[in-house]
Length: 438
Image (cartoon, rainbow, N blue to C red; front, side):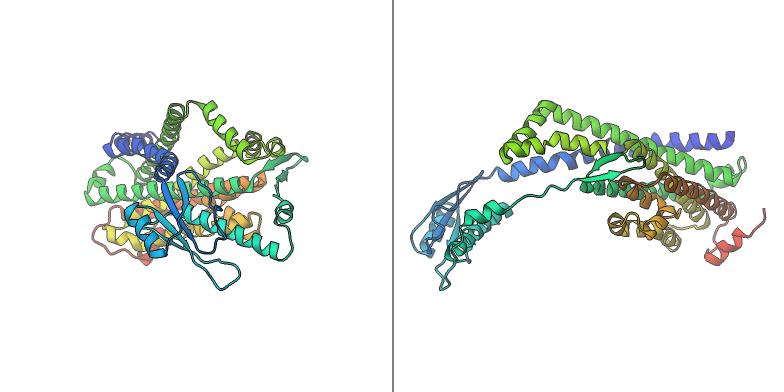
C-alpha cells in the first residue's frame, strides 16, 4: 500500500508542477468566464452601430408604420428607386427599404438594399411590422376589429410540480433541469476522455522509454497501474475544483466591477420586468421568486455528490481500460483500434441524451443508467428529473463492481503487455494474456 501511495504522490506532484497544468488551470476559468461574459459585450458592441433606413413605399400602406428603434432610425423618401438608392446607399451610406406597388390587394413583398449585411434584428423588425400591418388590413377588410383579436391572445404559464415520496411537492422547471442534465453529462464525458487519455499516454511513454523496466524492479505491475490511475484522477479533480473556484471568482469580480454589485444586477432585472409586464404580471411572475422556487426544487446535495461519484467512478473504470491499452501497444497508431471499442459506450451515452431527456423513466433509460459503461453519463442526465434512491444506489454499486472487474482484467493485460516490445498486438493476443496465470 505504501508503494501505491508513493506512485500516486509521484504522478500527482509531477503533473501539477508542469507548466501545461498551471497554464490550463488559470486559462480554463478565463475561457469559461469569457464564454459567459463576452456575449453581452459583443451584443452591445454589435448594436452600437447606428443604422439609418430610408423607406421608399410606393403603396403608401406602411407610411410612418416603421418606428425608430434603439440604434435604428427610419425616414421616408419619395423619388424613384434608382435615385433614392444612389442617395441612400452611396451618398449617405444608409440602407434602403423598397416596397413596390403590387397588383395584389395586399403588398407583402419588399426589398432591402444595403452595402453591408443589414443584420437579423433589422430584417426581423421590418418583416414583423409588415406582417402585422398586412394582417390588420385583412381583418378590417373582413369586418373584424384587429383589437378584438389582440385582446383574445393569452400567455399560458405552465408550472411543473413534482410530487415526491411522502406527498412533498416541489416546483421544478423542465428547461433548467434539461440544461443542468446535459451540462453534467457532457462534463463527465469530457473529463473521462481528457484524463483517461493522460493515463494511456503516460503508460506508453514509460514503456517506450524503457523506464518501466526500472520501476517494475521495485513495484508490482498492478501497483504501478493503480498508482498511475489514482494519481491522475486526483490531478483531474484538483484542476476541476480550481476551475470552478476561479471561474466563480472571475465572474464575481466582473459583476461587482461592471454592474456595481448584486443590487445593480437586480435593479436591471427589475427594470426589464417592469418594462415588459403589467402590474398583475409582476406580482404573479416575480423573477426572483421564480428563480428561488426553481433552485429550491433542485437537490444540489444529491447533484454534487452524484457528479463527484460518477466522475471518479467513470474515470477509474475507463482509465483502467486505457491503462491496459497503453501497456499492450507500442505505438500511438496502434491505440486507435483498441480505443474506439472502449469509447463507443461513452459516445453512445451522449448520442442518447436527447431520448433520455424526453423519457427519463423509460426502461431503456433505467437500463443505461445501471450499465457501468454508460451509467456515468446517463445517470447524471436522469438525476435532475428525480430518480428513486434505490436506482441511484444500484447504479453506484454496479459501477463499483464494474470498476473492480475492469481493473482485474486490465491488471492482467497490463502485467503482461507492459514488458512486451515489438509484438503486434490484437484481440486474440490480449485474450490470451487475460487467461495467463501469474
